[in-house]
Image (cartoon, rainbow, N blue to C red; front, side):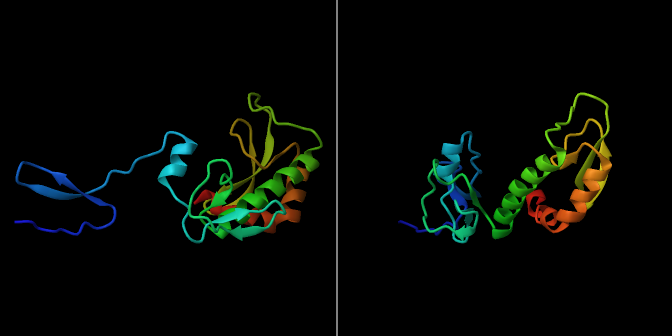
Length: 158
């Protein structure tokens, strides 16, 4: 006698004994390389990418290509956040005029960071931050001028 069992997505049939089987949740296979990630994770509907013109567009291919799909994001908000980060890094470098923080030294650096869901202005010495400035005045001016762009970074912390 043959019996047909429909196995839900994300589950598999596991043999427990010669006469007994069990439906169990599949173990998630974590990729060890980018190429392996691409094989295991086809492009889903409603994924987004940044075009060469700096615009956000939706994907049309179902097959993930390791060479071309490095800038695909699971949401439009995350794609916009990365684009905002690219802009903010260029603006930060302009404001700092060649200054680079010494993270080994105890000198104060003036940072903008996410704290309890809000971007705040802070001072740090050893903790690395991306939006860091050589002076309090530059940091405060940057924050005031680009607050809207900074707010777009929040999806990166989800």
